[in-house]
Every structure is written in structure tokens, then in C-alpha cells.
Length: 399
Image 1 (tube, rainbow, N blue to C red):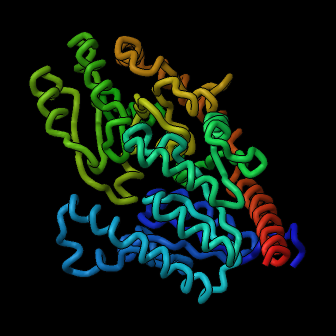
Image 2: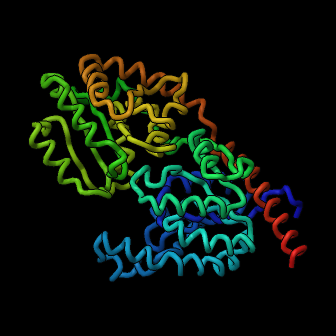
Image 3: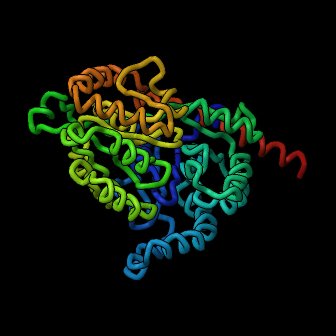
């Protein structure tokens, strides 16, 4: 094989299926261009059954006993299994004749980095660093330090934002190893629903905050902002907060009750199916993303794909995505008063949301296609393969 030719048998590895929609979109684009690809994720929990999916990690959790475990125990079991399942990955990758291992996430970087450094002797290893601030700031100092070792374990690293490029450089990663590839649209084949058709079905403005419920998502900031919206305008709002909780949500529920927000806020704290997610976005007039921190957001890219306008905080990743473009209003991070002013303005003049929706459709057309994103990946794979070949030659010289 020529040293600068991309390997054509690709394993995309996401142990806990953290980004299934992203993985599926990338795998489908890779497969469409004639490459063989296999998704390697959590046993028994893949959301879409496709030929190129394989549940490898944490098989004990797929048993009847494992499915009954409480959430806190599940996390402990995953931690205990991670090293064993990473070691089992060696034989699995050999069995499927994978020519490159592309990791989407590392659940346990202290363990994973040690094993990946052994794995890289057998084939090129690549990481997509979706989260350049581990846990978006919620992880411990020790885990953040372990990421430094992890990043130095790969032949190539893919990031989605300039902020991530800067953070990798600050960690001492060779800039030539790090490649910027944009996050693609999610659900781009969904039917387009106009703002006017949504409004014709109801008399209140429907605002959706969707996705895993975690502290960095800023739901507390949204609720505080809603208390600043005049009561008569709040009666014109239908704010839906939907997603599986990964934190204690009792405080959020109490806050809604104490501040009399029940008339405009609805919680749905659970995982929702793909079809239900589709309906939620179809019903939403706008998406709310008052995040404290993130690089690239799958929820944001789902909104862009559907032409649904967004109200978000002006964190680096969102500023980069919408720099000089329409479709979103960005307010300063943590500024609940600014968030409240926009929501009140929208409640008073919904036509302003329609203007943003039209701009979002234009913004949508400027996002690279998944076919283009796949080709960018092939270039990274070719470079990673070249680095792996060079490593092999050096080992022979010093053997």
C-alpha cells in the first residue's frame, strides 16, 4: 500500500455510543464512497441496527441482570470493564481486518491512553476530539490531566473548532498532528417545515431545549431568564425542556414551582426515540442553547439542518459557526438578562423568529456535506497511515 493512500477498512470506535447520530452520518458517508466501515460501540444499546454496527463494549450491561442495574452502578461497571474491553479490541480489530482505528471518544483516558499506545504498533490510530474541555468543564482535574497523555497517543487528531486547535497546542500536541474538520449537519434529510405552518397550528411560541440534561447545558440559566420575562409575555410561550438527565433535576423542578413558571415550562426528563425527536424539532419555532461550554453541538447541527433558528450563548464554538452569518442570536455566556430580553422580544414579535428561520436556511446551505467531510477524513487517515509506517521503520532501525 502506498504510504499516502488512506486505509480502506475503517473501525469507528465509540465505546458508550456518546455520539451515535454523528457516527452514523460519518459511517454512511464513508461507506457511500466505497470504503468498508464498522461502528464499534456498546453492546445492546445501539439505536439503529445497521450492517456496519457491532456492540463490543460492556457486554455484561446487555444481559437481563445488567439492564436492571441502577445508573450509579452502571458507571462503575463501565469503568471496571473498560480496560478489559479495550484489550479485547485488539483481537476484534484483527478479526475484521481493520486497517485504521478511529476513536470518537475515550471514556477512561488514563486506561485508554496506555492501551492505545500498544494498539498503535499494530495499526494507525486516530481520535476525533469532540470535547476539548473534558465533560465541558465538569470532569475532575485528574481526568483533564489524563487527556494530555491521551492526546499524545494518536497518529492524528480531528477537531471541530479553532478553540480545540488552540487547546491542543496548549497541551503540547504537535500542530501537524491536529486537523480541523467541521461538524456536519444531523438529520439533514428531515422534511423542512416553515415557521408559518408551525404558527398556524397554535397560538404560543414553542421554544425547545433538547438533549442530555447536564450542568453545562445551562437549564438553570434559562429558567432564571424566564422569571425576568413579564408575566403577560410568558403566557405566550411554550418552553419545552426534553432529555435524559445526567444530574439531579429536583432543583430545577422546585425552581419552576416556586417561581410560578409551570404555565410556560414543560419538563420531559427521559430518553426519546428518533421519531419523537423528529416531532419535537418539527414542532419547535426555535431552539434554546444557553450553554456554558461546548466545542460543537449535535443539537445545534440538528437545528441548522432543519432550518430552525437558535438562541444560544456566544461561546467560542457557536461564535465560530455563526461568525458573520444569520440564523442564530448569540448572547453573552451567563447573561440571563440578555437571554430574557430576546425571549421577551420574540414573545412580543414572533415575526422576528421567522426572519431568523429564513436566514438559518441560507446558513444551512453553507455547511459542508458529509461526502466532503468523509473526503477530509480520508486525507487524515492517509497522513495517519504515513506516520504509522514511519513509526514502523524507526522500530526496525532501533530493534
